[in-house]
Amino acid sequence: MAVASDHVFSHADRAHHAQAKDSFTIRQFGDMDATAVRNQANAVSAGCSADDHCRSVALSFQIVTVAGEHTRLDAANFSDAANRKCTGCQTLAGAYQFVVSTPTVFTLDGTARGKLADIHRRLDGLTRSTLPAADLKSKVDALAVEVTGVLHDAAAQAPKGDTRPDVTLHRHLDGWPGH
Image (tube, rainbow, N blue to C red):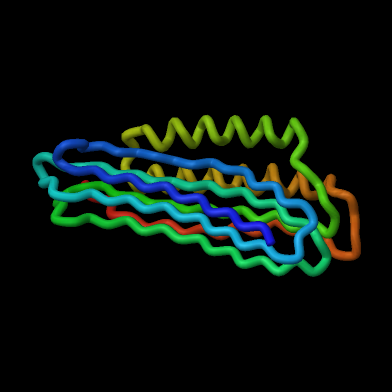
């Protein structure tokens, strides 16, 4: 059994008004009978005021490839954003889990990995940006669409089997827009 867990946590408060973290991991498992993967993003803004607000952003992209005709997959994907006594704060947590399942083993080639690395760089830039939470959500969702496209193209090149390759996106966003 293969097990993988990715977790991003950011915490903004009076001492650190802006905290932003992201994760972009690729987990390539071969032929597996069972796989358990977990992806989580948590963001907290605490103790700031409308005049002195905080911003906390946590974004996690997890890409998992599994192979096999009868693989059991336990995939968990969570996000939680909390404002604690934080008037006017912006808090955003986003967990994006991409699961690529193919009947036979395949690995992402250099072209796909290069495209994913470019998306990761752009995610880093968005995470550190000062975009309002609503705009940030839409831009991060657009990156998720790009990742899905790259993975669909890569899976189409996978060796064929009795079942078709599949790409599934699990997305969970939670946030407080503030001002």
